Length: 368
Image (cartoon, rainbow, N blue to C red; front, side, top):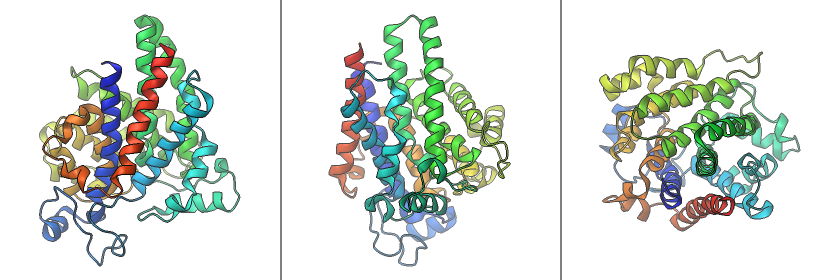
């Protein structure tokens, strides 16, 4: 894939984070049965019910929540670092936790609808003067890390493509392995900023590497390689904090998926039941989102199926949206332009998506 192809897919991945978030927002926490009763089948933006637990007041059709807001903050940090430090820095240096923490505690992020308890507690600590390295919530197990991880997966893909062009296969693999060590260490810090748990670190690494895999893997044996890469990423996060109080391991569920290839023979209801109803617990939502993606990684119907399946629909929608965009690029919008037209603050969303894709592509050009 050339630079233009990668740029197209990065832009689409970012746009679909916001779109998946906004599609899933009105249905968050509802079961599939309740969604069908209240909305029919969601294929476009709808208003949340007035009695919605999180989004009943002030939220309208097409509005996104913390999933996109925090993703945007991370993306804009990466863009700013590229502009500040120059394009010759290794990709892991593009992850500036000091800058990310400042952006996440801005009023625009703190006042956004839908923020989880672990994330809010951690960011309030930072606002009160506690350093981001000590702010993480010790029982944080939700999607607050994974939901904002897509831009970091794009950094990884950009580095992989750059190294692939410059070195032989053997030399590239060695250099990329070394690069991953530094990248993983930075991603763990991003996770621990809000979720001081193995699950927080593992979920962020999982989604970053899932986006990376969707951007870089060939079609041949895609599903197997995708899960192998994501399992390896999870294991890195699950090997920190030996005194962690959370014993569930996302990697165990992903291994079960790989062994059973459940997405090939289970329907959506069966997958939901097997994988915790896609709840806001990352042990449920990460595997469920990936199972939904692997059912059909080439169709926008996958996004609609995910937000209609119930559970943490805005986060699941934003995460599967990132993967679909990364895999298919802007062509995925054909026939579905209403998803851009009806998106809240679409100009700002498009600007961030475009600038991140261009910044990472320009970084590659300057180092060629």
